[in-house]
Length: 150
Image 1 (cartoon, rainbow, N blue to C red):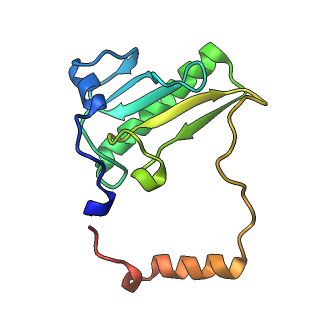
Image 2: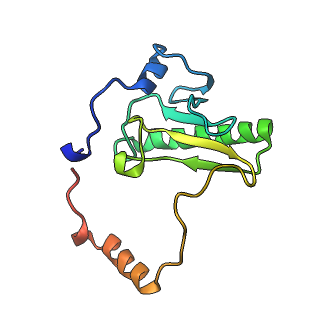
């Protein structure tokens, strides 16, 4: 990670949960993941799913661990649906400070939702111009446009 995007070095509270040094209200554990209630819950049942093996963000996690996190998120979404009967579910995963990440151990939020609850979309979606989308696609698919990884 380039120095300008590296968060301040501090102990990882999620690694402390994995090791048992820090208490959490754990809902599920398996060999690859842990799911627990978020201590800053925005809605009842707000759950975090993390990999046991530390990975700072989406660019650092292994494909196998990422798949395990999503399997657990899927499983926990079903559990939360059975308990809370929400009107919907928001999954949220943020990366690096610019992406709104605040704990630097990859995690997925599962937030049971109600119609007209107090949460709001962080942006207003508008249809993109077709020519802009086509140009962006060409840029993504052009191997010459790729920058070296940091």
